[in-house]
Length: 185
Image 1 (cartoon, rainbow, N blue to C red):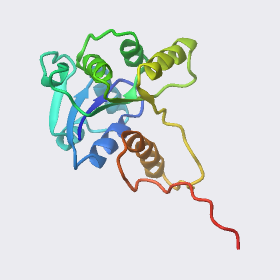
Image 2 (cartoon, rainbow, N blue to C red; image 1 turned 90 degrees about the vertical axis):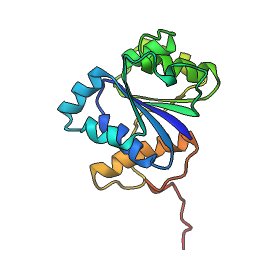
Image 3 (cartoon, one colour; image 1 turned 90 degrees about the horizontal axis):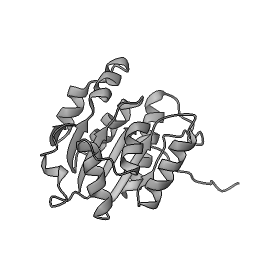
Image 4 (spheres, rainbow, N blue to C red; image 1 turned 30 degrees about the horizontal axis):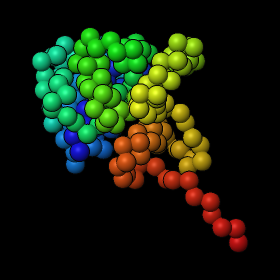
């Protein structure tokens, strides 16, 4: 698969790195917003390490990149984490940078767009924008925690979130233990 991974300026940049690490068998196109670079510094996440995991790396202002055109289709795109600003831009067709332009192309060509919004609580505007994206065909995968698999450390939680994104892409993984009801003796 050819997958765009876009990283925007909100907490949870580590999720993008784990996703890229999990997509090693696929061709990946990484776009990191300038604000995401700032957030990564606060969260002690290395953007350079993420860039080494990707096959192709672009700046958000590269509107002449191949992935900016619908004539160079990719199979899927993940915006992880997705700021409410980027979510709003995508939902409302405001394609002012490579991230939002690529997302527009993915939606208009009927390919898979997975958006990982990272904010809480949610405003009514954010909820309405998520609704618009869902109606347009995007999958909304907020990093909501589950406890049934009994996470022991932060890596377990990160793996669970990224596993849910991989599930949304239809890709196999072993990042978390799936829900299984065990037979009673």
